[in-house]
View 1: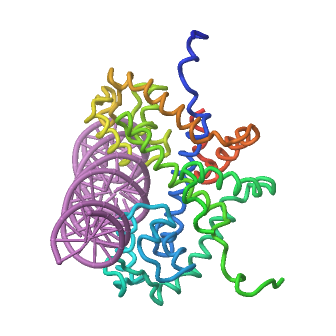
View 2 (view 1 turned 45 degrees about the vertical axis):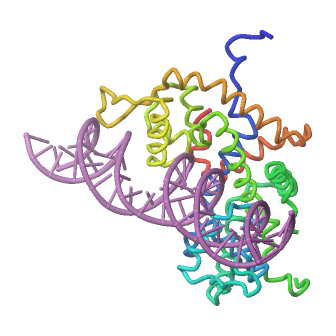
Length: 158
Length: 158
DNA sequence: ATTAAACGATTAGCCGGCTAACGAAATATG
DNA sequence: CATATTTCGTTAGCCGGCTAATCGTTTAAT
């Protein structure tokens, strides 16, 4: 089918949701990284700690599933967290393959700092959102996440 | 105001916009990477090509600004694109510091493939969004992007 | 003209994602 | 029991972000 001429065969990328999502994504990750850097953490480490605060002693495979991450990613992150003494691992007795990940005292203590930074993120950067937007966004974001994760494991953790 | 006890001192991360954004982010990037991988590209390369398709012969510093990326990031990406023969660089005559980035024939030709993949991304994964959501999302995402980029360079490219 | 400052690009090195390939342990299968 | 398959974890290596440090070029100051 032949319609129009110049404008026709090019997608206006800048207006697609996928494009906008990518741009938000990059910007947000940078901000998150900078904020968590203030308390000596990297962005990804925060999310792993979040899971452990909610349930200490998870196996790596559990963490991978809950965070929707690949096993090697979790492996590397844990190595980093061990180096800064926030977690420690223990081979499981019953199963020689698994390692359980436990928070150290410092790991537990980190929680308040993360809470504080998180609150700042939420208030500082999202100040311009009105009430309606604050209500709609969580819904939309959850929907998007399910769309992109295939909805298979999207609701496992609640 | 005092409500509840256990729940009190812990932020419900899972409901903050920042948290949800991070989760969407990771999931989306993975999907994007997988889709573009089908046509031999990586996610980031697509966005750089997008800019060149809109204006060929940009300098690296221009690309960095338009993509909101750091200079070294662009430098590495271009190196990768040169290796797969999609772009080539030329030292600028007037200014010995700058290098201009030009699409090769293959670089131009890639456009249709990217369009096709992009369309699939937009349709396959966002099928569950209703009309209202499709209208609201672009607005919200743009707002978020401006919030996280400091709104300084957020509207430079349009 | 000389020197200082700004600018564009690169290199090195880090974290956060991934896949592929492998090793070790547990479980199925025969 | 022996073998095959699954499972958990790690290593290696890649891309996509970043910062810090460096180099060469250009421009501004003196």
